[in-house]
Image (cartoon, rainbow, N blue to C red; front, side, top):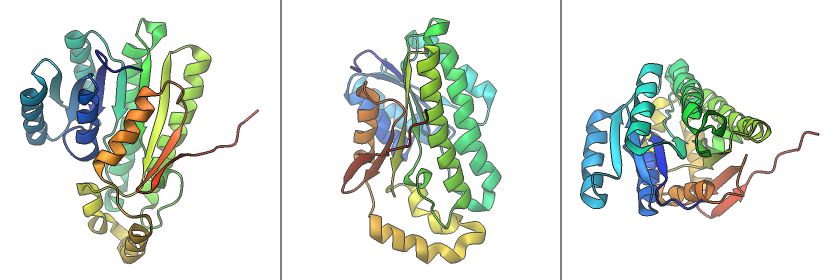
Length: 257
């Protein structure tokens, strides 16, 4: 998929991975709509992008992905401004074992909600243009992170949802590819604050740090480059891409007959 002229929507776009994903999409010619609950960070990022890429390439909408009303409004405004949606990046997420219900709500329920609402615009069966949806999962979506059982469960859910939606899309003729991005530890605010967000598993903070020492830490730029591969390579569909500092690999899954 060539990105020139394509329209992308990125959730959790203002900081961290979402920020880097937005930039790499713009660098490759896409138009990007930024959705984030952090209004201050979002407006500041939009201002910087307008100076660099022009005001016609990006829009920022304050949007809480837990709100169906706000998502609907943002997607509607996106199609009115740009004529459609070609790329969705479900990137918004949190890690907080002390507030596990909110972790489930944002990491899984909201991701499902945004996907289904975006399908109304992207699905070729509805007159959409098709495209690609990339869901930000985690290495914890493939192997358990002992100090974060709920976070682990939500990211496993994201990987499973992504793979099932890929099969459903192909079988139904949606014209949409689905892929999961599964990075290890990434240098973001979420990573920096992990020890404070372990809740009843705070006693396992040192075990988590041992894993960090073993797997090392990625930059957001490294992850964004892998994200771009999942967006642009049209052979990638139903994939879970593991991203680590020493390289990337695609997870192999058993095939159900």
